[in-house]
Length: 339
Image (tube, rainbow, N blue to C red):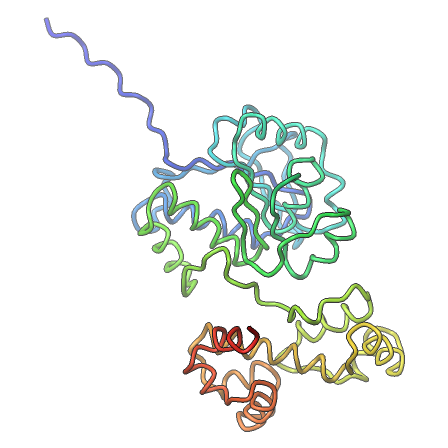
């Protein structure tokens, strides 16, 4: 009589990820990350967790509400972190970070002791730091939260000019679309480059980006700790297609135009108008380097009257026209001039 066949060993996905969602987490950062896993896990977009698996973990099994109000129901209790290849902490609103329940901190510390790599997405890096798990590691945060990080963690200087940072068993990213690129990095590492590229293509993310690619944001020479100047610059950043004037920004912030101008002189040694133009031109350079939009389209997206207006302002700042900048490889050209 033939012996019965031994049962097949249980199937194990090549990439297993557990998610910890902070209160008021950023939904887009979570969705971008998990959708890359979903699309890489199966053929087409059938969404079967074959090559990847993912679970939302919870200490209480209560739904977790995101910053936009949509709640996500957890899949499993926290349990043993060793059943995952990575634990991903998705942060969100700064004010909620201190309210993370102690059970999550204990879970993350158990994961670190078990040498499970920890991933901080958006302000998830803040959560990991508060748990005492980032000492001696480089850490990526969004340029938007750079100063918030400095205020909360003395002596720690975050990386806020890169989209993600991989430092041994700690991986951190700035949030938003960068979470998709970090997830694609993990997919490529564990499943293959083709699976990573497939995910990004289906999500209509135009190109795979490396961790050291720059974050789109404020020019580095405009960094300041003056809260009034920061708010004014961020307001311009968020309204690039129809940038308000200095008087309008001052009114929005509840101060006089003269006070706003004084703060800009003291913080940046330039006028608000000059700083606002630098923000817009930084976005122009980014679009020239990373998109195939026409100069006319870029002018409309960055608040210039027309292409001629943009060309004049760009030539005055960079010494070349936008077309010449693009044709010569603008970012490298700028670096050559600075060395």
